[in-house]
Length: 202
Image (cartoon, rainbow, N blue to C red; front, side, top):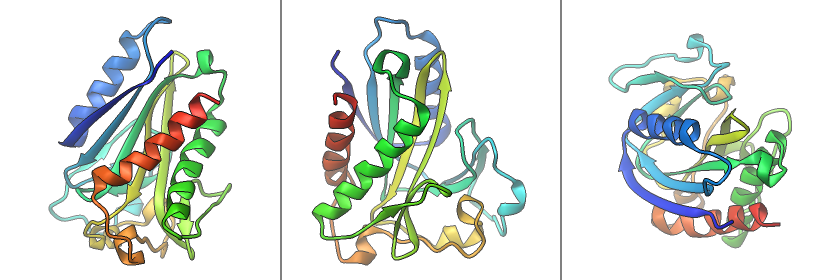
């Protein structure tokens, strides 16, 4: 079954989140899987295990308590967000496999730009020299996944200083622009989505 890739441009978080929930609840065994590529307007999101104490000094950026896994993170234009709306029962893939798939998509993409990155089993996501460049958070309902990854490309990173990113005090973040890779976010989506599609079909 083919996977539809939808490019949504810049969208506010709450709208897309609601659309993901509706898509997942309404789908059936014949519904094609989809990948959504988006950039969000500035927002902090708290995952299901997120603690508000990790919000340190929030001023004018909204905070949304969402239903993905994980802790607190930040989204804004210049960050690639890829959501995977997959029937994981049909694909015979578990949640851990999906997390690894998303991490490897970012790691492989960074390798194409000559950047060495790693994943940490104890703290999901992707890291370059100890700094976090990519985050993963998923939700499964009706044996189907939604949410996905966020990958820092070329954005204002300063709002990350107002949170304990992913629940870790003093965890620094980085992005491709700070690693001397200058690329449009929609261009960055191409290798990332390609890697995900390859993994889905393997």
